[in-house]
Image (cartoon, rainbow over the protein chains, first blue to last red):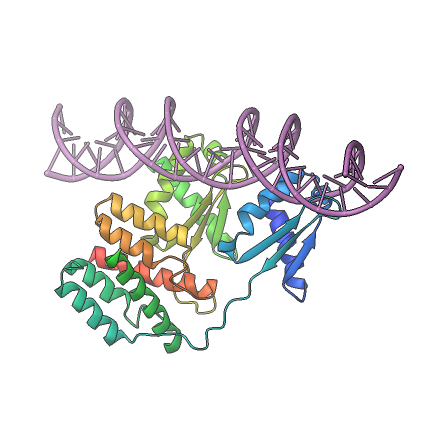
Amino acid sequence: MRSLADRIESYLKVLIERSDNAEVEIQRVELAETFRCAPSQITYVLGTRFTLDEGFVTESKRGGRGFIKIRKLQLEDKTDRPGIAQTQAENIINELEATGFLTSREALLLRAIINREVLDLPTMDRDYIRYRIMKTVINLMEG
Amino acid sequence: MRSLADRIESYLKVLIERSDNAEVEIQRVELAETFRCAPSQITYVLGTRFTLDEGFVTESKRGGRGFIKIRKLQLEDKTDRPGIAQTQAENIINELEATGFLTSREALLLRAIINREVLDLPTMDRDYIRYRIMKTVINLMEG
DNA sequence: CAGGAAAGGTCAAATAAAGTCAAAGGGGAA
DNA sequence: TTCCCCTTTGACTTTATTTGACCTTTCCTG
């Protein structure tokens, strides 16, 4: 059985889905009454399910005519993304291995991961994800 | 003589077989009561019989209204590709690290790579690629 | 302007699950 | 029989949910 928090979450997501501006505005007490729960339950749902990490931004105001507004962030447009081909990535890995930043086992692991068979996506997306992975690896080496 | 673990295993597999989406959701305590055993026995069965290696992915939530969901991966079906959420992948990596298959540095590297920020794709694709990566890693460990 | 009413916010306690881990138990192969 | 590996258990840990008492902010009215 789904929890109350789960049900409130879906309810709100449906409202956002149906809206034409990807946002919804509610009254905390009202929603709490609808679901027969404590108002702080709504706050809890917001804090656990509608975080920035999940792609949501919330805004609220206390006092008379107070409200809670939840907005779903639209994914940024990815028309002009960076990318790395498999061979390029392999070169980078070889370099990192040669300079001792990666052990041979780590290099082996990475070469396997950035393979085009593994990153089974359309070429554009594949190169983009490969770029993201390599960027992450390099960042780790530096940090 | 079939062991308790064996019987729990078949029971779950029958449930999965009968379901139309190749998955089953249970409550650990409930199932333990059905079989009159310790709840951790269920965890044991999951850990030994429903591994990624066997083609299963499990997902769970603690706390109120917690659950355990077991899904059988269908590798051939394109419309319903297998996927692994970040938390699940992290669990696998932790496991591989704990059992000495991965060094802590390798685990660190992998955890960074399978992060949702890095695999910047729609959730479906992201989970799919994460699955492909984890599959590759596990194959490497076995080979 | 003061004060009350009408919001939402915070936090910790109570409760409900699942996870971990080490130790004990048991059964089959050598 | 003995040993090893797989099972089984239970005490302890971690995480998630739900509620309620109390706090803060904002608006409105006299």
